[in-house]
Image (cartoon, rainbow, N blue to C red; front, side):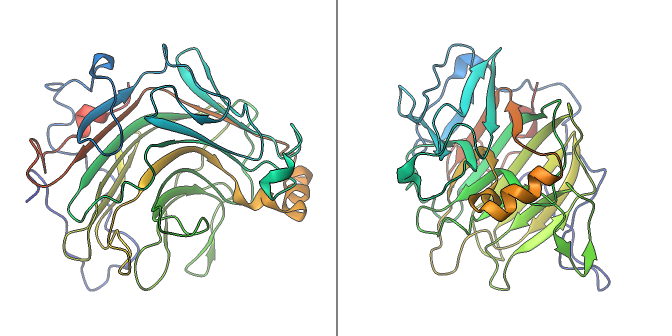
Length: 310
């Protein structure tokens, strides 16, 4: 079904955490025969298939809520103006105590600054495939925290806020009985019946560092679901696995930015502050995405080069 693509079979000695091949690039990725999606392509809503691009230079980002064209949405908790545009990039800033969280938020602290596609109830059917590509920059003041947070996630409109479907997370999660480095990057799949799968990838971002991220998902079960992640042209995760909940077999909408959910609580805000972490500042450059359903032109094609960050 998927051209130029073959997932490895798991050996008897392989763990169930990942089937990543750490130095494997997609076929033809380095050939320069295909350019990435140009800014002139523009964007459409989540329900429309095809290539989409946001280059940010001429896009007005609202302080909160819907973009002017209703194709994206700023999701902030608990204050506005935590997502801004500057120099052709989207800037995300979360400071738990400044500005003061709005009373109607349900928390005394700020913990989320993200953008997401719209509509959120798109509920992609089984077999839908998606690609994302963007660069993610950590501010010069960045300090790795012992409390985890996400910078990319997919989320079903039907799932609880605390249980996204797939995500990329930073933090020292206790994985397989081992304490991982503070601030290590993890690929996470929350949809298997066995519970969350957290796979450390050996990357600990530093202040001022930019990561080039490409993600490929096929929404499906153990027989047709696919989850792949590349960071800086290195494939760090590759697995054929369930990517939808059994109870709700649909794919979810995407979000990118900062989601520091642990900062909902005073004890965790204090803990981070004791490590010298008073806020998080990050940004993304051009965001390229592709959504195809079975039967659409290009379905199953290797599209790494189309979404690859500049």
